[in-house]
Length: 188
Image (cartoon, rainbow, N blue to C red):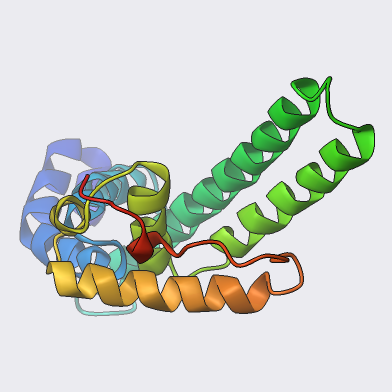
């Protein structure tokens, strides 16, 4: 690592030697597709922070895992902020487009939209990915499975668990039973 401070090209050797373990670490956390992008971010961040590296370990890999954890946390914070903004935008669009409805209904919708966005944001990342891919993007189970690189059965399982958690967290908001996603004709 020290050599890369004076000779930035030496960092390429570090990246080549440790890209696969960093990628595997990230892939276990976020899936293969996103892991590719985050791995690139990890090595860019590590390159920029290479002067802060302290060789307490005989290998640079533990330090790179720390950088990867920080990149992952930053990514997740950004995703949670995006979900919050989407919830607000949905509430605002409903409020702005509700001339025929009462203001009370628009305010209630805004509060519910915020609660739903917060509940989705609170899901485990792999569950949240599946919910967003299927319920928001409209993908089929098979397409969602391809997107997160898991079998379709795993997608169904994650979606089931996510729905259960959302039902528990939003029980007071759910006043009428709506058909579950499985009960609708969804073939993507």
